[in-house]
Amino acid sequence: MKAITALAAGVALGYYLGTDKGRDQLDKAKGWAVDTWNDPRVQEKVSEVQEKVTSKA
Image 1 (cartoon, rainbow, N blue to C red):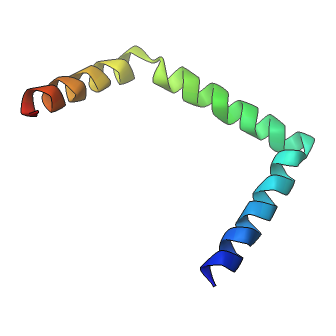
Image 2: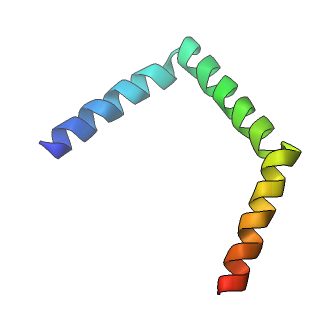
């Protein structure tokens, strides 16, 4: 049953990304992700977490 669900999800995702509208949405999502990752507030939190993890190791 899991294999059928995974196959159906893969087909749906492939169809959606194969359309122009789907690719536009993917490009918007990529842009949002890059903008969010490059936000100084996010990078500050990333650095804080990295320091905590490094000090625990």
